[in-house]
Length: 402
Image 1 (cartoon, rainbow, N blue to C red):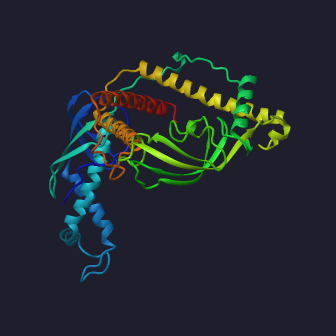
Image 2: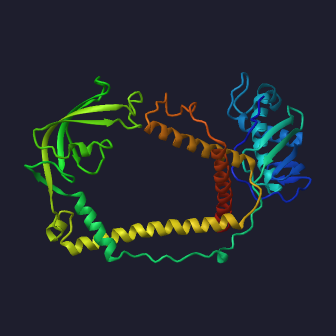
Image 3: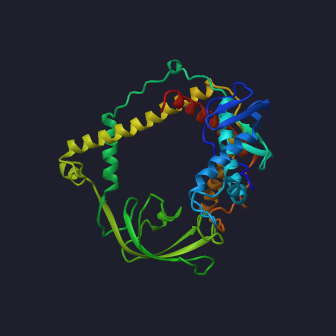
């Protein structure tokens, strides 16, 4: 017979507050004693007497009596002794497993212990005709005082959008929806240039070195730093060689940071038209007129401000809760959260390296990532705060039946 070493107990009652010599339940008699208690760690000794186990075995065999067929006996007529002989061992295992789970739950409940993680069960004595004796090693949730919400003070944020915010947003929208028309002259900053290109590094072509009808607005420097200014003065039909250094985060790591030449063929040069901000402009965005568009933007800006203020208030509340409570944290919960935070830091560093062209075998290829002592210290502080606040908020939820 094998009994589980760990049990899924869920949440029991409250914190450890002492023990009594025995605990009677509807299921039988169980004796639970706290043998040691240090900090949040407690060890309990549990004994379930053999007579109570035997009663449950007999009950279970009686349930099976009408369901099994034994040669030479009509259903339900087989002697109990014969049933015990044939099915006793398997029934004992089933009953003992159930008693183990129930007794563990009741032992923790009796001693007002809420497990912070899975209790460890060590079976000392078991078997037919014997008491079931086992120990429970458990780390419990600390005692947490009631949150005094009336003592929490918060800043009051006035949320509104003024005319300046709205005007800037309208101008931003207009800027992002510029219309461009053909230009006969030479390209200048703020003009749109459409071109084909073929690039080389050290005179050699490379994968992805060609492009057609690429569009850039001169002066914004969004393609490759230093590229835009070399196309200033070009006109439709011109050919131009732009010499630039490939960025350090270029996808091909072997080419990153190397000098390159882009042979460009200018297809079109276009200049922007001044976007008139009027009722017709507003209608392009589903508004009735400019006033209606401004109203829509005002609501959007206010909503954004409200979101920011909610985040600020949430942080203020959590900061005050963090500063108001000081208790030992369950090591198991803290260790798990440290692992989670460090795992997140590793992936952030992976993303940074990927942006610079670093290659990884797979998403969880962590071999190249080493966290510094400062990273680990930061992870520890973040984890402590998260575990503490989670326990406080959980306690608050229980008290208020959330």
